[in-house]
Amino acid sequence: MKVRPWTTAAAVALLLGGALAAPAEANTPSTAQSASLGTTYFGNTTRTCTSSANCNIDFWRLPNLRAQDEVTIAWRAEHGYMCLTADVDDYDYAQNLCNFAEYVMRDPAGRRDVFIADYATANAYVNFYGTPGMFETGPYQFVVETIRSKIGVAIPAKSTVRRDSAVTLKPTFTDGTALPDGVSFTMKITFKDLDKTIVRTARTAGGKVRLRLRLGKGFAGHKGRFIATRRSDTIYQGVRSPTQTITVK
Image (cartoon, rainbow, N blue to C red; front, side, top):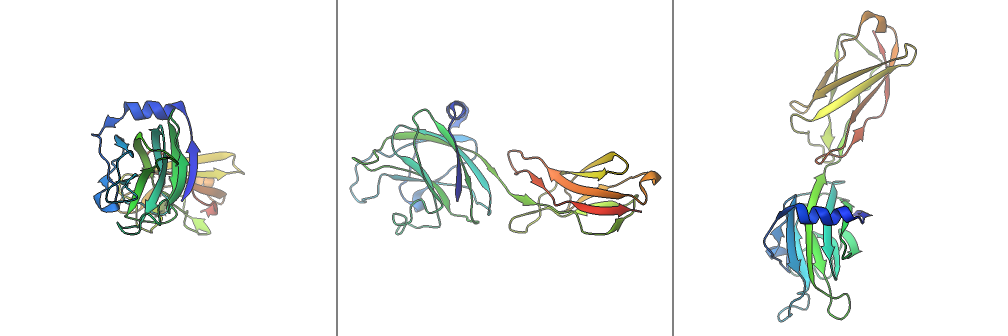
């Protein structure tokens, strides 16, 4: 998993301003508590290890991830480190710790990190850990701010399109499944020789987006450059289709 660190004072404000969850921690995958979006969680990696040599590791379960999902976590800790681990069990997690995203160093002032999932998984965890006398241990807090899905969209390849017809898009997630109803897309058509740009917007319904052209007679016989886009938000990453040049008839 790729990591894009953002270390800002805003991370602290977000941590302190979110809904609060009761302090809890789990030091094995099977006992991990689920981390819901937008909720601030607290933990402490300082504890006396009696039955496990790896008891200074905390596991928090993330929601299911698709490939290339973007996970943003704001967190703060006086000591220790944070990383992401995936597809481990109670017997092999110590050898595979941080196998989904390499560790990032704590910042007492707070920081925000963005992780990009390399592959889909239903068993990803946020880990906080330390080693007494080495990385040190201590309290921490964090919030999973957003998980933004990567989506794909393309303009159908064709040589001509009727001016009174529609262009149908079939946007999908990275696993090929269709988007839910109500997701908005915009299509821009640029006619360079006419010095005009037409914009159409529609929402997904039944896995498709139907964008009616409604072009006047003056557009007939002219080539347009068709591009479909969607701006990023808290749920989806922004997307821009390849350009298709199509003649209107």
